[in-house]
Picture 1 (tube, chains in turn brown, orange):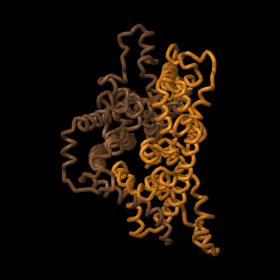
Picture 2 (cartoon, rainbow over the protein chains, first blue to last red; picture 1 turned 90 degrees about the vertical axis):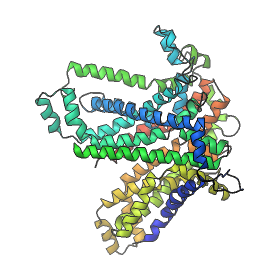
Picture 3 (cartoon, helix red, strand yellow; picture 1 turned 180 degrees about the horizontal axis):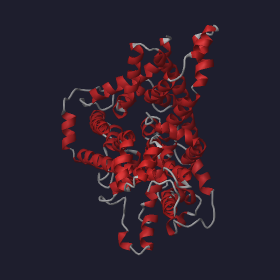
Picture 4 (cartoon, rainbow over the protein chains, first blue to last red; picture 1 turned 135 degrees about the vertical axis):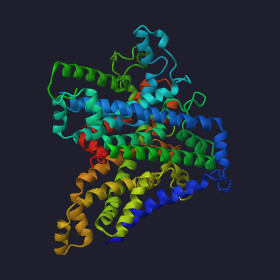
Length: 284
Length: 279
């Protein structure tokens, strides 16, 4: 075996994944400021600070709220689209392409189009006015209540097509006989969905839920484009806080601690979800 | 609901779905017409087609302001994306070939080492990588970005290649070896051409990730002339606040190459994303 062929790739892998992750975890326990001054070990002090810092706590809550609601909604929308578009419709191929297109577009760039949609003088408020509901007009991006949910809308818009494609791939694996047999038996739509289709889709469900959960917990671009974290921290997430604390305020040690919290959050939630889903897959 | 016959109810469902798809594309419509409309019309009548078409903002956006201009950052995005794809394909396919063809413990161990990289948290890795790169002058230039992406996306690349090579029969390679070809020659002439489908998937997936990235370019390239398109769009919005036609023009430039590419390579792209499900 020409083992040497694997060495360059191995070098990049070890340097940027293993060594860097280990170094990042170490920095989380230091007061490093990113300068040459060096880093001093400070124990759990960074993590204590995260617990006491109002912005960090808000960011943590926002991240979880946003990710969980995103995962649920994007999968429901994706599943409905996939079931509708699986067969029969004449325009199914065109419509599939239309829904999938946002997935490939720059999240930052497209989020700016949405910030126009949500602008106080923008199309959404113009629409509410036109249908005779002027009281529904509000400053979507400037309101602490609504701003976080505008980000949710943009996320669902961008990634529902990806969930759809995951489920379409799963549906293709269902043998024709199964569809027909359950149709002939006269089973109701809901019954067939729960007892025939969902069990067959179990692997697709696992993949889609895990993938979307990780995407949701890491949300960064959309926040930066739509609100920049405001108004008054109302849309800060862990990823935006990692960026700001580290590169805007130069608190590398504290930023690393936030990154460690985010990494553990992703690992724990994704792992719990994976175990639960795999267990259900086996029972079905 | 899941019958295969086409009834009037299916027709109704079809019309409804086309309506939803139209609403889904409204933002893309705003983007397309918004960039060629006189700016005041974006607010007075956002849904209407432009009264006159004006491409003037494109030349203004192209020239830009301050650091990155649109033209320059288009170039940066292209260079970084293409160089990263090439590096990943060359180094990744070689490594995966070794991993896939070594059926002993060492091969399996290597595979695990590579694939575990997929789940290692990159956000934690970026902070020390940034300070190390600053020491060795890899911050703010193309070389640094290519090194960064090659490392970050190597696990995904090796994962995709290894799966494909494992399913590939060894007959061709063995025939070439019997004919006296060296290992490297066999790989370049026989194996690599057979990998074309998965090379396509790797190029598309990694290219998409690199092209659309905002976070890493913001951290590693901000303040230099080498910023990529998303960072330029981000800084333009700061400068041209509320001049939506200009902002839209910059967004169009960063989105159109991907959209065109999508129309061209749609099947391959979707296959790349769903590769993990068909077990």
